Length: 546
Image (cartoon, rainbow, N blue to C red):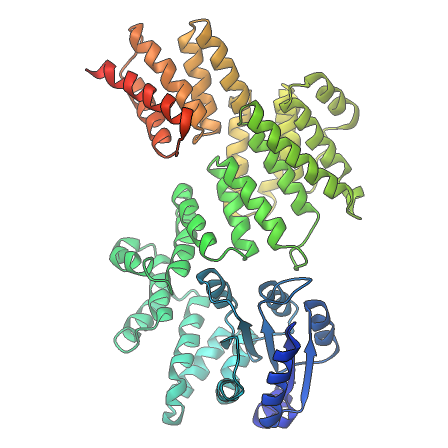
């Protein structure tokens, strides 16, 4: 196959080309331009499904794919699947087409590393010129591309060094050097990669050189040396996405999960289609108690994964669970709105052909919904009748069982399953660092805090109304631990602290709680009556300082 591919790259009449584009006029322009280059074997598909069928039938040396493929999946997830299934490799000439040039699209395309990106409308002369150049690179650097395809980074460096001695290849030196630098990083030779990219900066000012240098230093934990460079890179459109993405991974490795979450949010906004990044965003949202972020992440994953290799009915289950988690932190009206949306997702899952696999999981979800609606007896009856302490092979299923038992006050059952999850995590090498940390946090909180954030808030309000200020404050402190950005809880806590000041119960250690409360309020945008109430509270607090 390698010899056949190399020969095809040298003889255009032996090349197989696949065009995936829903506009037949574009098909015609591309086909005519390719015929003029001597390419005869051209297949066209108007949707992703047919494009994949063609790839199953024959091997293509060139794939030209539109981002705007209609009807089944977009070009990003189509190309992702083509790579996943081995239909597109580094030795394949990969061209991306799009009429759109937004920053989020360009970032998504760069992630897939096509050989070129053509903006529609196309011109035949430009197509011929740019495709010829892409084919020349593949032909001239064939051995190094094959080494990358075979994941042989040492061999890629060997061929790169040989090519760099050939003056006739000078115009390809940037491509060669980039693959050599990437190979050092793949081999985890970070000191060598640092020296390599630092030396390149004397000659080349390409974005990939700066990003390679930054990655090499971050992997060595030397972030303090490049703070100014990081600030510059996060300010430039062509480097900010990759820089935020690298920083998110750096902070995860440093176990600074709050900072990692801030960085992954920025990276996700700049390139929202990548499912693995959305999953990382979801895991970090859970770990940082951002229930709204968690819900948004699961919905994004379900939306973007549709008809992709990532698609699964379990993604809807994740949305349902995240919605219930969010509802547990909200006041009645807002909570009910989220619960109704969760029920719509339950109906969608029930209509799925694989619904039978998730009957117990949906029973857990339905019991949790009943409990949030304060229909505790119905929830308890559902759990006692249909659920057992038998654990699943899926950690998420087990965590949701813990939640339903815990929320219903069945603490012994919850702890039994938590212990099983602990053993499961200990024996599961594939569990990510962030997920493991989240499970550890869940175990700690479920054992130490007996109620949901919403229940604790309601208890605090009742204590406050009966002038039991210290129990009210204790409940609110626990509620904020579970929902640290909840403005309603923060307002309630500040009201309790204000009452404690008036009753001369305010101690020095309470000052930090007050600062925490005002920091939460300052991070929220209030309008109308909510803004008036917050300003009134701030004024009352200020009056106690005068």
